[in-house]
Length: 112
Image 1 (cartoon, helix red, strand yellow):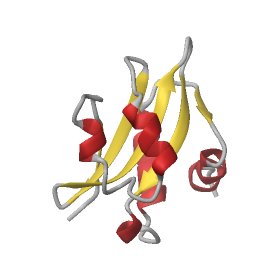
Image 2: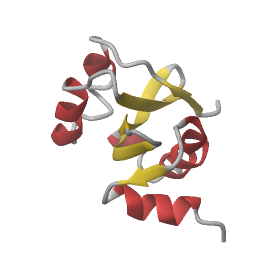
Image 3: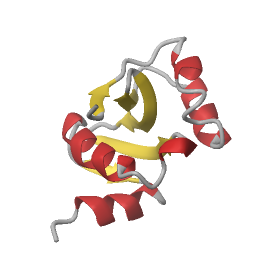
């Protein structure tokens, strides 16, 4: 089954929905818990379950991506790269990448 990449509208249920994805990333979970109207979230779904997120915020122009969370069981399976490649076109441009997401974005979004 393919990985589905889509925008997720942040709601009161978002923290619970992504709790397993962020189980070992408490800072990102806290950031999601304090989401507001400017929060942007792109999710990756596999077999009907969320397995990864890109979390950021709208800026006056474009957006800033602060975090990338991937479920521990799916790491090393190409989820990072697919989420970045298919998720970044869903975000307002230009995109500013915070560290350490910037390192991954350069690795997976830079043409070979």
